[in-house]
Length: 388
Image (tube, rainbow, N blue to C red):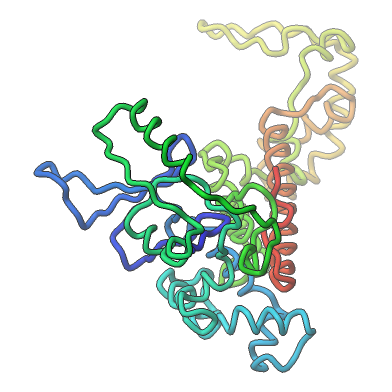
């Protein structure tokens, strides 16, 4: 009987094919090596497979590669470790013998060598670990290759083939099939499952988000320095995957709001508070074009308070700013206004803090989720905690 995979399996990287997912969720293969007309249209056929790195089974392989218990049992040729991890080793073999452990991601052709290795099954490791025989064969149109896959079931009578001539009306076809069904002898279906009807291993959950699996492991790699990935790349990885790598966001992340920079970039005068609480009017007015100064109505007593505080801290800020008195004046002025409760946070400060908090929280969740799935591979499980 034809074997199937619960989730899209990887296609050979050695064939010039491309997989497309349509709006209905069905996969199609375009064969780049064949031309079906003078216009060089690609031959298209339905597929249950996807490109190697678009398959959950490739990422299972990659997460397992990062499992320390599994690595140790491989180094000891299956002698060290718990019975559970030894069982994983017995089924999956030593994946490190197919790939380089010091690189971040395995070459797809190296992965494919492991996938097709006949040690576990003459059809290959991938089939042995993840494929199964369906308990029930759903009514379907079969290709010539499918017919060969069901050879034993056809010969035993468990599956019947019906030849349909397609240049007839559907009513005529329906009538002919009805007559055939009257002659068909059926047997009672036995619902008892056996080991052939379930895969040895299958991903958890009903949905697979390959892109999230990819993002999580990339952030985990950067966080732990796996595959020589620098931890400094963590934020760049986040911005890239979430399409937030705009110049504005890059600028915000570079901004420093510590020390005197807090008063230069993190604070600004609050117009509403100035007017309602302190009676300072028109502080935002600019000089007119003819050079006449705008009339600011800052109460004299308030300005004296500001000046007093400003004078106390000016020298300290000037020292920090290496003698830049203009900037020291700006910083000490804003410091005084802040002490008097006349300021509010700038938009840059608010946006930068929000972005940094989001990044830190997302990275933390991704790294924890990746670690959870790395640990799960040592127990024969995967795609844990991925449900949205």
